Image 1 (cartoon, helix red, strand yellow):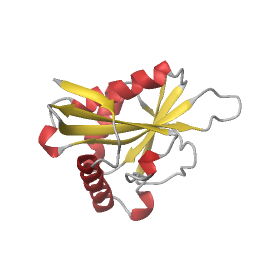
Image 2 (cartoon, one colour):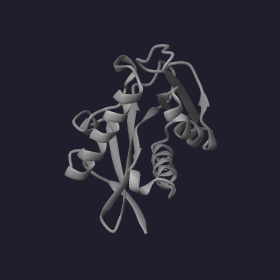
Image 3 (cartoon, one colour):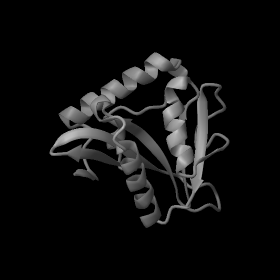
Image 4 (tube, one colour):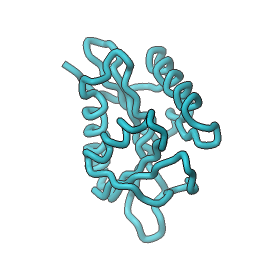
Length: 157
C-alpha cells in the first residue's frame, strides 16, 4: 500500500530524486526558465513536503509552498517539486500526491493553488495531470513573469 507522509527533502533517497528532477529540468528547459527548488530550498518554513512510499521505497514527492496573499485575497499556495521515481511511473503516484497536496490546501482554507510547469513535450503528462484535476491556465503569479517556456496554472478551491 502506498502511503503519503510529511518527510524531509534532505533525506538521502529524497535528495537523489530531487537531484534527478533538477537535472531533468535543466536538460529540457533553458536555465532562466527552471523554477524547480533544490532540497535546501524545499526545507523552508513556508513549504510542506511529502513523499509517497511503499514498504519504505520512495515512489515520489511533492510540496506546497504558501504564497504571500495578494492585497484583499485569501491564502494561496504553489505546488512545487512534483516528481515520480522512474520505477513507479504509471502507477498513479502523481495523482495520489497531488490529491494529498490539494486536500492539505483545502484543510488550510486556501482559496487557490497555483503551479508553473514547462511548455516542452516532456511536460505534457504533467499538464494533462493538472488539467484532469481542474487546473486551468492563468497569468504569471507571485514573482513569475511571462516566459515562452512556462505554463502557469491555477485551481480555485
